[in-house]
Figure: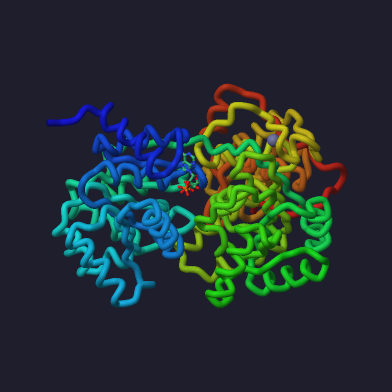
Length: 525
Ligand code: ADP
Ligand code: ZN
């Protein structure tokens, strides 16, 4: 006889209290758990720290058979299994870190039906031995953690994740729960398609973290800037992210020399040293951890008061995940990004060595980040939230540098913006900014003549501005989401926002033109 859903959810609440010791669900936990327990496939996009683990751990304890969790983070897996066991939950894991004896013991436990939760690494799951074993067991729930790894459009694509889709088909009876902290609309779509979750319910939590102050500073002397920042935060815990291992070591040493308690963390250190440094940071024995992005996956330290990006992150997803490690306790925390065009060039250089497909994706991720960092006016939360598909509810937050101390002002630029947008449209959305500007300014160069662009109605309507000024307008239109810049040749096309604005003749406000012959840091063409 089917139990009513209310009774089942009551059991979920008592497990929350008795096994995990919490009085109430966090936002979205109840909804996700309710949905999973009704055996409906589910995609949940919840920010780091939101409490995604309970979304499968509680259903696993309500269900009677086995629940499987696929996770790429072996270190994290170990922690979770330890914690569950400490709470009396029979959990096991299968991954490459186990000795043959431990591995066999866990297989035996699964075969005997002694385990309720199995954590498995994707490559382990794909081994025929494990797939066959699982196919012989009754499975209630298949959870895919870090589900964005399935999409080659995400920032952390893992090919073995793609094949999980096939494994999923072997367990049609199990309900499927896909979890991730960052997924743009496109990545969400990829996850659903790859896993065949046509009817899945989606839960996407608000991404805003209002207690984080967001600041971007032009990087001049990074060490001096960092020391100045730290001077005012003598006893606050924080993370400093650097690009390379060498940079991590150098900076950690420099900070120690200046009297700060700091330790390095990167994949080049021995396991023991890395674990010890992490532990010291978690226990508040040291103030600062200087790290590559290897640090922080699954780290749960509530009182991180600041995150500094000493070097440029590779994507908005990465940036947001990293700053998301600050202020888990909800108290005000500061996120500082040091931005330099030199870093962009350095990252481009690395990206250029990638394979074609990967290269284009990486370039677009970097471009989005550069646009965010170079925005000198308007609230910084707006592009961040829009990036994750959320429409901001307010035009200013008062918790970012642009809101509290604007360095540029937004002015009405409707007429020039319309000229440029129309010219992009008329030239067929096939050219970069350089050519569009040539057409606007009535150039008779070879490319203009060859394409017969001197015949267009927008030809020569832009002699009111210099090429440098038009470049400013183009860059602003990209930054504010009116133009989309794509591919190797940075071709421009109109966004939906631009089409709507042209149709409705909506006013377009952009950053004011720099005074005089302002230095142009970067041209979109
Ligand atoms: P995520 O995977 O979304 O980053 P976790 O599952 O690691 O988040 O949870 C983050 C922290 O929040 C953990 O310490 C967890 O125990 C705690 N937590 C989760 N759910 C609750 C709750 N309902 N009440 C209080 N704390 C919770
Ligand atoms: Zn703001």
